[in-house]
Length: 448
Image (cartoon, rainbow, N blue to C red):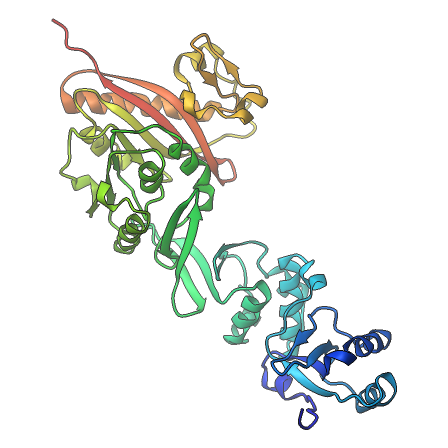
């Protein structure tokens, strides 16, 4: 096996993470070695016993080295005639016991050890500055903007990110900033570790590929993506005014059976991802991408549905949505909006008759949860949601009135509009809800 290796303080002094030290011996002596190390409280329970390439076995031990007296005891008394040596495990595998810790606990443990190895005193301030949540995209972890802000981190160098990535079991790290107000909703994401930000994510059998440093991806939209995927859109032509990487375009094409989608997007990085996602999901032949400002879109009189998936508000897209609706039959607008609620104002719920008149779910959208939570049925057999907030309904009624006005101005005749459904997507911020209004718009029959 070669000469004994004595592990010293070089790694700690140079600032590199201290590798796990292990005693290496033949497999037949492993159990006796382990029992001795456990009795002496020297066995490292945080890491797995590993089989070496030459067939010998490495038992991790605590500390930066193992005194020679213990090595002699192992060779001469614990397993007479055995051979052993010390080595370092550069990529130690966490034990099942260690894996029982939460990722946040493991992160705190490993980062605090590494920081103290750099001669920096671990403090409550540093611990509070560690991330508590993150987004995982394969082997890339996207950290929130509110972590690693203390000045002490800035002096610890890029090896900090290697320690964080190792603790959380990934190879790449990125940190999120605030979304830039540039109209393209480009995320202010910094790549901390790794050479690129391209990741893959699967939702409801649909594969999305995108660059996290250039494109938005919201896990909170999964409920809405599942909902639209359940709609029956066979034979329909759709216009997605804010397509992004295909958040809603793809569910409509892959699962809802839409005949064709016109996808509008002006972020060039999102367009690259969208084109790729259409190809890898096998629906590129049923979609046309319109790159640029959707307010200049030349399409008209074509859509059975229009998706306005932009928050905090899609109002700028309302005129073009009215323009692309079919003039003969109209269609449905899916209007996204952040709606503020007003805590403490004790607003009264809308009357049931008002809800029965205008707030219906599509039959295919009925969910068991809504029934269990006290949903009721009106005399038309539709299902009513009990969770609609008064603020959502008031915003929906205001949007309905404005859309009806836009349609009449644009086409020179009155249109009938009806609130079909108000769908909560997620809580965007305290007292702010991301909701979707399904609004049916139909031209009124000509008189005489």
